Image 1: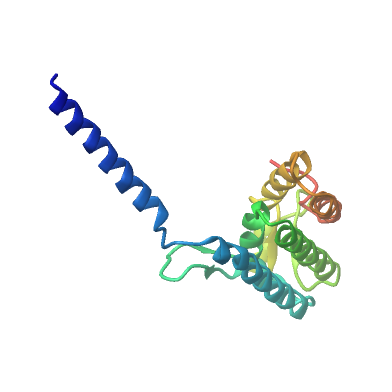
Image 2: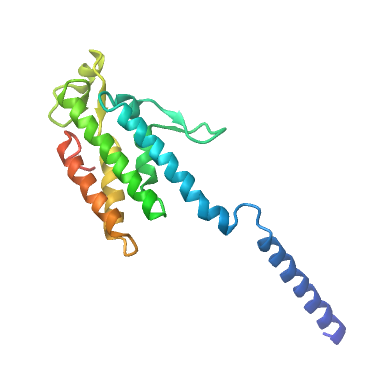
Length: 188
């Protein structure tokens, strides 16, 4: 290897490093300022969902059953309840607490609506959930994926070293509300 070849190799390496630096320095996706403000948008969205939960507190069945596309041009759909459970992993403490509290309210209103006879919570002791659904009663099944997802998500919150006390307290309140719901007392 001659001295000229070594210089060419070094120049090529420097050019590649500069290209990499340029690639990472001109990120169009987000700046720190954008990231600082994104949590405010997410928190406003959570507060909007909380208002929807409050508005449907006498019959929250649509929030458990109706599916919506959550992202533009996305074919994947989920329910309001499912979307809230999926967002328990929120990185911002204030947003995470609001999400958990919103879901706790939804679950509490669902238990109350079940007691009032507006909807039926499927449970292991229900005689025939299919017969109830066929009779026109709205059946909300917490046994499906919901209770196990809630338990797993709250377990992560409670065992997190970085998790704040507010998140942990909200997670415990959610678990106690889940224990009040038929079908919510066990996870798969």
